[in-house]
Image (cartoon, rainbow, N blue to C red; front, top):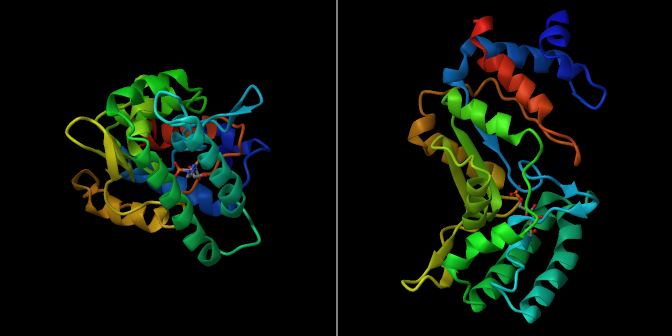
Length: 258
Ligand SMILES: Nc1ccn([C@@H]2O[C@H](COP(=O)(O)O)[C@@H](O)[C@H]2O)c(=O)n1
């Protein structure tokens, strides 16, 4: 289909890899015919909506943003880093199955959350910790969030990170719009604003997908958007921008094509 190299030239870039090009094109076409009113977007957060690295340094995940003296002491920093060095290589180990990794991920998240609770983190310090961090959204994020909100397309961010921190990152980047819904690990603060637990069921890397789909089905705003036969999954190479996702979004939501 010539149409796509002309109307979405970003898809012709050699950095864009597709398992079955014709299927991708058919799906985008079907989504465009269905229009913005049928669209819903589900996204990860850390290293998807945020950058992987900047100036050669890793951009912190929402958990790592909490590594700030305003919130935790040196001993906790040390223990959290040891846990990261132990469990992160397991999370990304291509030789282990998801079944093998799952209990180890539960162990990692549980240990870190216990450490954070012991630190009696203060809710009113979170915004400053985010300000002082090097958290950074991926290039092209503004166009992405703006387009979705203009077109009233719900954006469900499903993250195994820390929801309170995630919210603060998008708030400080001025894109926490009403169409944005976040499912994540939220902190539970006592009446004086001190962390005492994490709310609800733990979300980790290996239970995110099922959780995202069941939550999406339950959200009132997403009802009436049953575009389940047309699903497009987009992954990013670490240092790439959101231009491909933005180009597809522009095409699908542009009234010119209707
Ligand atoms: N203590 C932890 C636990 C997890 N992480 C990383 O957070 C990432 C969350 O990613 P989302 O796409 O779900 O937002 C996850 O992949 C872990 O690598 C961490 O940094 N510290």
